[in-house]
Length: 501
Ligand SMILES: Cc1cc2nc3c(=O)[nH]c(=O)nc-3n(C[C@H](O)[C@H](O)[C@H](O)COP(=O)(O)OP(=O)(O)OC[C@H]3O[C@@H](n4cnc5c(N)ncnc54)[C@H](O)[C@@H]3O)c2cc1C
Image (cartoon, rainbow, N blue to C red; front, side, top):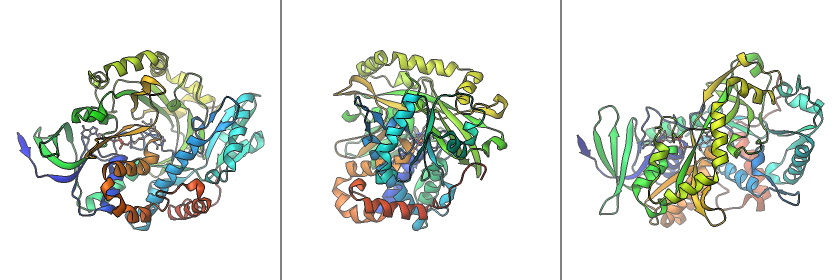
């Protein structure tokens, strides 16, 4: 059976953090626009945005070594770290606005203060970390960062990692207390609860099968109700494809020329989760290491305190791997069916260029639990297998496209907004830095798709995000103001807390 429904202003496909953020921004900017959401699963935030499917790091480049690259002359390029930090400050301001406006009640339900640390071993890596510390610590965005190569100090910071360590190799860490653990699943659910209270119609178990442009310039979606099997047709003036790993297929179905020559490379993930509360209590930080030679940036190992289901947990990983699925709940044919005539050459070129990466990811999938324990023991020398279980994380679909500097079929590690020239449809592809920068990325969607409204909306955007349109780095006093006010509003202030405390 097929039903035709009345047209609406906005349709958001997918109920993850991206649609949640865009919907909330639009509801604040134009409360009377009608918004509908279609989600194929039974609840909000069940795919990558779910707290068990991602690492929950509030990515502000405080600890991720891949955001600061060593240049051939030995100096450190911090431009990417600055960019990501500034983008995270945008999220922090918007989340604070939501709390101050009572749209979100208790910030501790989704964000917790947690030191972010980088940890390296070996003389060369210690020298790199020191250089990186010197390059960052004078920058107002990274104020409060500490460095130590003193095992006594490190024992105080990370006792679980330092005790029982027999290696005599030099070891060093940086630590910054203004880091965060973010429960993106909880945040997604809170934002959708708010949207539902504003009459946003959220339909679960509704799979968007097809997207077509109508003769009058609208978008018509073919939506299948998973329970009844009924097919419905919904039209909208603006469509956001926030399907996470499912976005590429939907973008291809829309047929917009901007979506051509783009492919996706799926990377799966596994975490090890500690089931022993005594061990969990001995660690209080996110500790990021260095990616192994040949390993992709998304496989950087880290040992993280997490706040999930109202309790402290300890997760290690993610172990990247290969799976042809684009969503955790997806199909093994996802990769195959994403290859179209327009992206075939791009995909073949990417395949040829990334043989060693694919081999690495397949080898990673085959690792036994004991092999994974060996990697964990580089962090916790005394880790026992019985204290750790394996959990399957979300899928990350990296964008493949042709670029001027990389050539045909270049694998991208960032996020990418692809929109039609007339701004009537936009899709979000890619997975990194991900949910942390959702507000910045959704503002990009708004700027690209609604340029005619930006002047009129700017005062409200500035009310929500005071740094909108301003370079934070050129306004150090604004950085101070934002750090202080967001920390206070989001409950991130307070005394230092070490493990055992
Ligand atoms: C292992 C791992 C670790 C990560 N770590 C971090 C981290 O530490 N910090 C960070 O900031 N980010 C991290 N990320 C990235 C972050 O999780 C994602 O960027 C973010 O969750 C993406 O949100 P989304 O809304 O685009 O997608 P999702 O949360 O995946 O939501 C997409 C939704 O669309 C639905 N959907 C798809 N296709 C259709 C369709 N045809 N019809 C209807 N519904 C559809 C899906 O069911 C899903 O609910 C990580 C990701 C992974 C996988």
